[in-house]
Image (tube, rainbow, N blue to C red; front, side, top):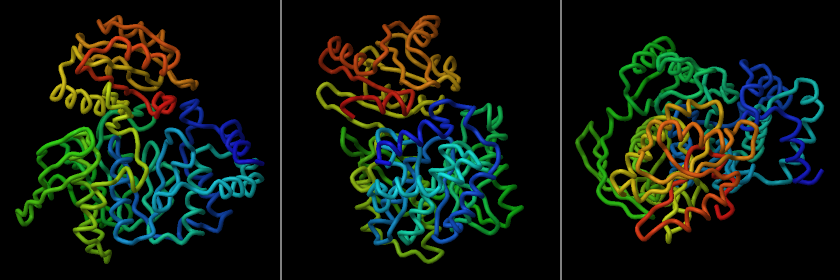
Length: 431
């Protein structure tokens, strides 16, 4: 098969959560274990860091990978979903997985795939593990998909576990309370393996502390270790002060991720670094700062407060749940008048879209759209829901048509904000 034929096979033959939703979800690790056994357990042949959480785990994964890479470690990175190219999911030192390997691996696993019928995610996790093992990475950063305890990635025993934060998302699988969701995410904590928790939250901290006690896993809360303060930002960089709360030393950081929410992720990364240094990693401060100033260039991270056009200003962000959208709106409120913001929105069906739409200001401009996947809410249905709460705008079957229309209506100083789904951003022609 060619690479294109291989991708068509993967997308068409394997149940894919991003396309069809719940029908692709597997509530056990049986298939992942079977695939790993078939491949001689590649997950045991490299060191790893395991990252879960509701929001921020993708950014945290990329930031930590950039730091390790800049310090000379051959670094694997597994994240999901991809935005444009399947190979974004699996990288080594920022380079996407080789197309020939994707073809060879898919052919090699066809028989066992017919037998056990893995999901798309299960097979790509196994593909990543095999790629990292064969290429002898020094360390791999492994991002969970949706949950933790039953996530396909949860067959590794990492050097460090990280849980960024907990908020409401995927409740039909993870539970309807923050405590229940935290319990599922806490499933990545392993016996005697240190864990970093990104955010201390009243409803969830006790869950993590109890789990860490049960497993004798040293626990660290990043927001009790570091404090951050924004100093300045432009469309390409932001500067902040970071205070180490243990010794009260303050340093200046500059990094190329300009979403204000990245300050919370930065604390998590710094806490993770401190743990890794304590277990033997050599991470130089100068190289750390260089890495954080060029995360996008080093790792290929996209879709996080991403400036895709400067004039007019167009920002794309993969924020798709209530907590993520609140962060987006908070930054826009500080930097722009909502009357000058043109929102292009698209969501998938299994989100609590009504609760998310309630967050948006009535005095902004709206353009409703959809990705071309089964899970997407149609642009007409989204418009009808938005109309019902006073968010008025037109709808478009193609996000690029929505962008073109917004460009026709904007005035000097206006901004176009695209958010709601990885998948609508993936369909932007100019992205």
